[in-house]
Length: 163
Image 1 (cartoon, rainbow, N blue to C red):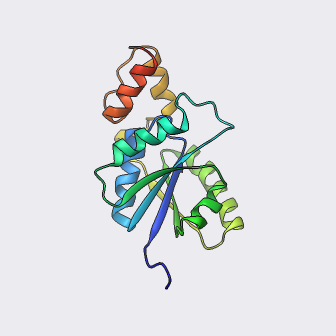
Image 2 (tube, rainbow, N blue to C red):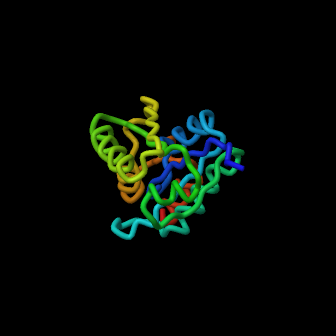
């Protein structure tokens, strides 16, 4: 019997997960039956948190959203999405620069798997300025990241930076 669940994947580094990421997850969870948040084991990126730490943060943040789960993936996104029987890849957009990059990635992904749709969700305007990179720098320098990241991520950041 064919899988009838409309499942989507939302992949990223999530170093750390931000309130912008959470907003996209919450809105995608209203559209799809199931969302799998894929924490990329991105060996080409220098991350503050290990893949396991990032996964644990994501799991803690999404634990009360019934149709959302999280896991680490190490393959091409299109291959992982196919393995998970996803019908779509969800991506968040903050600005035109995000769109250009994500548009190119969506076309590349479609070339590799024409059955996988890209669904773009615009970030809420009050969260559009947030990036994991900026959040890490603010926390490193002792700034307040309240409102930018969920509490578990804030706690983890300050622990990493011994604040």
